[in-house]
Image 1 (cartoon, rainbow, N blue to C red):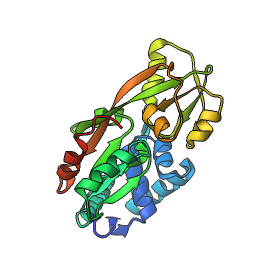
Image 2: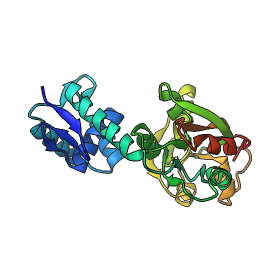
Image 3: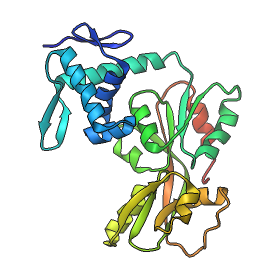
Length: 266
């Protein structure tokens, strides 16, 4: 049986994994598929596969199994991933409170930090839900404000609170849809599936202006539109949704939660 241990880096049979190799194993563990893992790291699937095969060479045995769900980590692969999680958690212990949000919830979080973090010591990340959730699962984030509440519901045993609300507006211009990088997009497309409305997602936009000018149907959070100076027509169908705060019970989090709780909308 291969021997797995953690020092400053994860080691397998005395061979230290490179940062890219360790992150590849962890990404597959957290995301479940090679395609999703590669996407989370911003690399191609062949590059991810190369990193994983390099780990197998160092381990001297396979770390993956192929089955009906595709290629997944076996017991050895999972033990490596868990050591990487443990190592990242140990490295995190000496850092300041780490919080994350998206452009949709940035104002809400910054208002809370004005109260809870007057010295400006918290580490703040502004990214999309997918990235923030990967960091949270890896133990690198203490508190995350979510655009998409489904992420919190999917995370078994997680602690979360509702800290606000918003509406997802449905701008319909036909069956071709563009997805937006931010906001509870899954709620919108799940609503189309529930209504059995035909649709095709043809591309994803990161720019709000490009999305609104695209000519494609789309879903967009009302709070963000108003803050960016876009005025909704007022007759768009809408889906109300909760803004959730996902957190770990560590020092400093309760102060941020107290500052967030009085807010009921963004």
